[in-house]
Amino acid sequence: MKATGQEVTIVMIEDDEGHARLIEKNVRRAGVHNEIVPFTLGKSALDYILGPNRDGVVSKDRYLLVLLDLNLPDMSGIDILEKIKSNEHTRRLPVVVLTTTDDEREIQKCYDLGANVYITKPVDYDGFSNAIRNLGLFFSVIQVP
Image 1: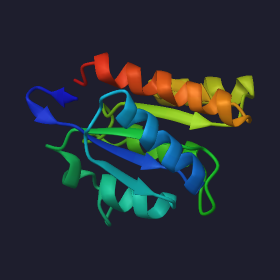
Image 2 (image 1 turned 90 degrees about the vertical axis):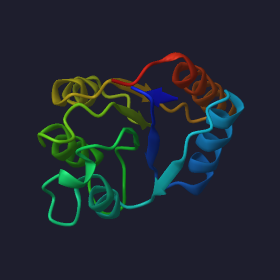
Image 3 (image 1 turned 120 degrees about the horizontal axis):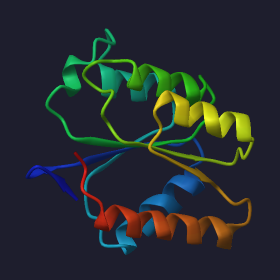
Image 4 (image 1 turned 90 degrees about the horizontal axis):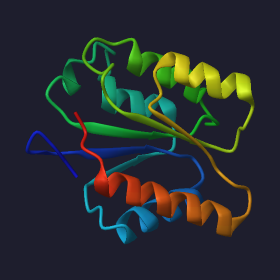
C-alpha cells in the first residue's frame, strides 16, 4: 500500500494481544506487507503519531494509516481520534476504528470527529477473523491520500 509513491506505515493501537495478532495475520493474508507499528497504550501511540510535545510536526511528511481500538487501558480511543484529527499535520491521516462497541452515539461521534471507517469487532472469533480479513482486502485496494 503506497501513497503518492511513499510506503504507508500502519499504526495499530490495540491492547488485546490476540486481536492484534489476528489483525496483522489477516492484513498480511490479504497481501498487504506494509510495516505495522503496534501500540497497546494510547499515550505511546500519540508520542509516535504527534511527537512527545504533541505538535504533530513529526508526522508532517509521513504516510500513516491508523487502526484504533476505542477501549484502551490508559485513555479513550475517542480522545486519541480527537487529538489526531484536530492537529494540522495529522488531520488527514486515515483512521479506521476497530472496536467491540456498537453504540450508535459512539459510532456517530467517531464519524463526527473524522474517523474514516468504523468497524465493530464481532465478539466471536470467526466473525472477528472475517471482519479483519475483509479489512485487509480493503487495504489492498485503497489509495491513501
